[in-house]
Amino acid sequence: MTSKSDLRYSQAIRATFAGMALFFAGLLAPGLVSAADKLSVTVYNSDLGVVHEVRELEFNNGIGQIAFRDVPAMIDPTSVGFKTLSSRLSVNILEQNYQFDLVSPEKLYDRYIDKNIELISNDGKIHSGKLLTYSSSAVTLQDEHGRIQIVRLNEISNTNLPELPEGLITRPTLFWKYASSGSGKSKCEVSYQTGGISWHAEYVAVLDDAEKNIDLSGWSSIDNRSGKTYKDATLKLVAGEINRARQPQSKRLYRNAMTASAMEYDGVGFDEKAFFEYHLYTLPRSSTIANNEIKQLSLFEPASTSVSKEYYFVADRGSKNAEVKIRFVNSKETGLGMPLPAGRVRVYKNDSDGSTILIGEDNLQHTPKDEEILLTLGKAFDLVVKETTLARRKITDRVTETDFQIELRNRKDEDVTINVVKSLGNFWKIIKKTHSFEKKSANKVQFQVPVKAGEEVKLEFTVRQGG
Image (cartoon, rainbow, N blue to C red; front, side, top):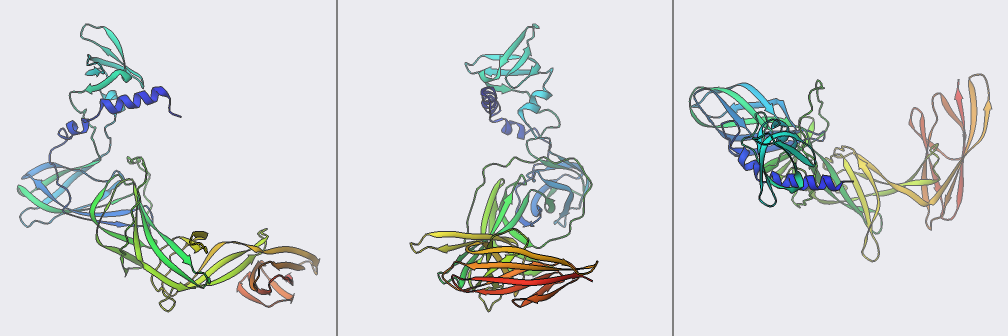
């Protein structure tokens, strides 16, 4: 909980340093750069963005320095690439320094210990002198006559400092030392990687009244916490898992705090194509991705596909109800047939009064076209299951037999088939059964058990293990 003194201090700080950024902007290193003429951002699922910019920069003949500002706070400075596009100038970057020690009231006060500052109170009175100490509530000054005065920060409306202390900047900046063959302006390509930005897919599916079809729409959800706004950028999304080389531990870069998220919806989809071993989605127009924003854009036009509803009971989990799932094939024949990036699928169904009810959600993995999709929606309220181990016998020192019984009760008004999945371990054989089964893997079987409306069916089987 924020204390009253903290609140007063926060208010004083906001008032004290209002407008200082404009003053400090002119105090930084020489070589201002313009906004990007061309900007593209490629976003990955794994907290990674690759930024490509074309900016016009001005160089002086010989050795010089330029400040490349407006970079993300989460930039990886080791990934920066640079190339001039002018045939007149040859420019080589000799040295790069990434500075992210940003201005804050605390840092400014700390740098001005034993230096003169000027405070203006709410009633216009000026307090000046050497700064001796500061805290969250007050500062201690020594005037030119040696007298000590303690000034409460909640009484201060403005603070005047003569200059920005060396080493502090208002925003993360790349400082380049360069060697140029001449003087003049040149368009330059700059590329770099940044953390703090990622994307994932979100899907909305609406099941029809007959529960035979769904309408599916997909959204890309881009979470930008990189410390930079990408204005009017060409946006590309990479679906797939790229390999990332492990980096040595280094000093953590400055990260902006996440503020309230913004949501934006846009109904025009991406152009999709295969790219290397991944899939690339390109937005066919420019878009602005603001810092500390979650932006949603339509991935594709809504599509319809046929589905089947299925019921499953996985033994040995202690559950008392069967799970309900929907299955469909991601093919053109069924109405889809597009690569589907990993993401959450929310499934709804409309009630008779027109209201939309959430009936379940599940995570979808990266799914190529023509692959089958099975989504778990929840537990079937009216399908009750009881699992019992009836007997266990030791046949030899290495062989045992176990009798299992699974009671399946259907309290619905319609007939269903429940798929019962059982894990059996190694070296098993089913020697007796009431229903047929299918071997799903080396240690897993699946029974299909029809259960009529209002009835109860007992699945019984004996497993011999060992040998």
